[in-house]
Length: 316
Image 1 (cartoon, rainbow, N blue to C red):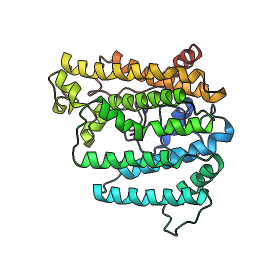
Image 2: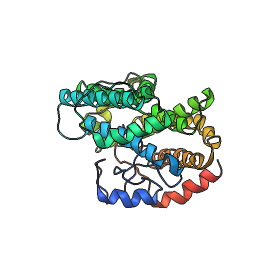
Image 3: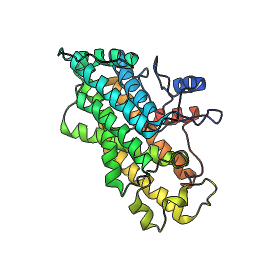
Image 4: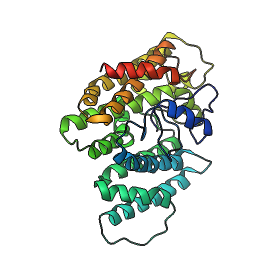
């Protein structure tokens, strides 16, 4: 569910906490203080205006913790959903408290998440429905993985992106005071593109873990099925490569539709968004250089990519 993530050859493939992530994330302009997970693109980086960094970190920690509830460990689907329901209840209390309303007492299992998030909501009037949408995406992931759900087509995948990715962009635009319809649409296009790029970057990781985002209609057009991608040992045939190429082409086109937003977001935030866009496009480029064999090998951003990303960001 997370957006595309890089790692060096020496870095464990598991997306959880690990020490080597911190140093390379910093080199990529990545994570700010207190954000432990490893991400492709800047989260509370030095480009983010300092006054917004605590809020960005609070949002990130909220989403990352929910993602861990949904994905990490050995809990059953029922246990994960129960924990996410408790997490949602704490979010509701957090929102009510930030608005100055009466708060129904309840157990606080995640104070490190909801105390700073509550301050952020109160300070910036963050839209609570966007935070609830993120939880709906995590719940959907748990249910779909448990029942081996297969997405019928790109439209259904975009419906998932509307919950899993688009709220993050809209929350950031809210911080920067950007609310016009065109900007919101382009933010959704960028965020959905990033989520799709993550899917096609992570085929070799998701399928062995029971998560499948390959749309059935695309597979059918090429006479294939999910089983044709379930092992890294499967040979690189033209039809397999064509499926990945088609999916990457759609993500690239979607990113290019949203990219002009980066020139309108003010100040340092706009430059950060430029790097986010270029980072996503670079992942697609690396998949293409691999002849679209991402079910065999997971491509990642490296430190050496940073000068290229900065140069391309300058010329957007």
